[in-house]
Amino acid sequence: MRLLAAFLSLALSVTPAVAEQIDRLMTALHMDEVIELLRHEGQMQAQEINTTMLDGAGGAYFATQVDMIYDPDWMRDQFSTAFVETLSDSQMERAVLFFESDLGQTVVRLENSARQAFQDDTIEEMAQDAYSAQDQDSTFFQLVDEYIEVNELIEKNVKSAVSADYNFFRGLNSEIGGDDGEVLAQLLAEKDTITQETRTWLYSFLLMAYQPLDEAQLRENIAFSRTQTGRAVNEAFFDSFDRTYDKIYYRLGLAVSQVLRGSDL
Image 1 (cartoon, helix red, strand yellow):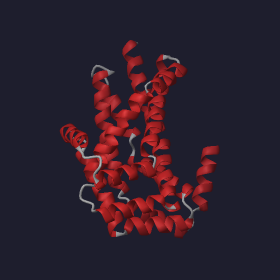
Image 2: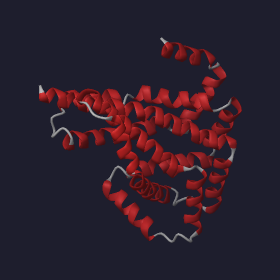
Image 3: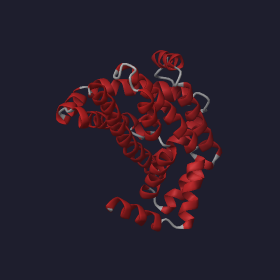
Image 4: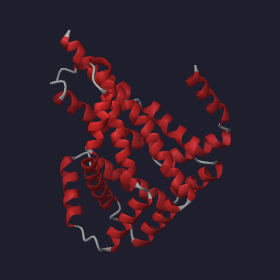
């Protein structure tokens, strides 16, 4: 009942003007495309889990659960709710203006294109090789590095990854038993490795995505990130990803545990 009341309270507090702004922001961010990319990544990961953890025994039940877990309407609600809760009316307006601008649209399209390309392992490996060979003294690398630092992308992504993995094992342990404390301790022990993997992925991804941008565009993108609105948008993104993926990974772990328990009966 508390969750329902909270939802109703939020729904009632959103004026038509705010509703219009959030719709414009979600459209400018191409969130439907982003969610479809995330769903595809989740389905690919689920296939790997079915192979490595379930020995291919997931069947129709596991596939159905994965499809329900990555529900696009629910995922969209998580993102829009985070933006409404985090951004003030004026910040929402400024965010819409930036992401509807030529630069904002260019950045969004480049990031989405790179994300889609990274679903091909060969392209991701090529991007990682390019990162390794990149001249780190170049202006381009320094600006990408500054963008990552300004938005605290490594720290925030590591935190999100640890939290999501922890919730996966919470879901897994809920049916087959296990110590959540031991899982968390193990994940924290692996934090350095997770950080290095995250660093490599982020630099490879953004160096590839932002290659078409010129110096002025890169600096303008960084300048927006430094504003209160830019910081609020960044916080809203990570809040929405965390609330979404903590739930997704818990439910995914639960689905795996149910398949494993069923196979033991």
